Length: 232
Image 1 (cartoon, rainbow, N blue to C red):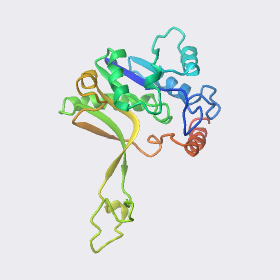
Image 2 (image 1 turned 90 degrees about the vertical axis):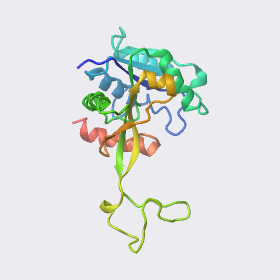
Image 3 (image 1 turned 90 degrees about the horizontal axis):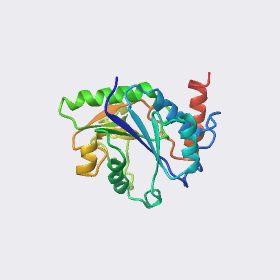
Image 4 (image 1 turned 60 degrees about the vertical axis):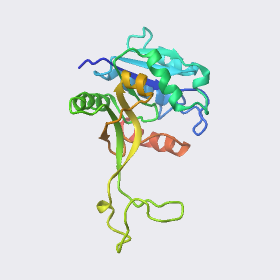
C-alpha cells in the first residue's frame, strides 16, 4: 500500500519530566524509544516518508545510523525557538507544512512504543476510508468509562440522580486522546493551523497501544511491558 502521506515525528532537547526520554536505553534498546519508533516506522507500508524534526544532536545521530542514505527517514533540524518548554503548539503546527510537501500528514510521538507499523498502516487505511464518508481527519483515542470528579469532589461526567454509583460499564463513554496518531491533510494544516479537522474520526485503541510515556514511572512501566511482549 502506498499513499502520499508523511509521518511528522518531533523530538527535542531538554525533556523536563523524563530525563533524556527519547534517547536513553530502553529495555535494552541502545537508541531508546526513538530507535524503537523509527524502526516501527521503517516497517510501515503506508508511510512514504518520515520527517524527524529535532534540535537534538543525539536524535539526529540515531536516525542517521538507522537510515544512512535517508531512503525513508529525513532529519530536519528544527529552529530552537520551536523547541522550548514555552513553545505554543499552534506555532509548531504552522511550521509543519513548511517542511512537508506530501498531501497528508500523520503526527505521532516516540512516547507510544506499542503502536507498531501494522497499527499505523491500519489507522492510515481507515483514515482514507473515512475521508470518503465525510470525515476530514483521524485521532487515536482510548475509551474511558469511570467516575470523574471535579475539584470539589462532585460527579462531573453523569447525572448521579438516585443512583450515585452505577456500574462503570453503564456510564457514558468518553474518549481520551492518546497521542498515538493525528492524521489529516496538509491543506488543513495550512488553512486551519491545526493537526485535525472539524470532523475527526475517533480511532479507538486498547490500553496497551494507548500507553504514553509522560513521567518517569511511565518509562519504567513501559520497559516492563516491552520486555514482556517483545523481548521474548
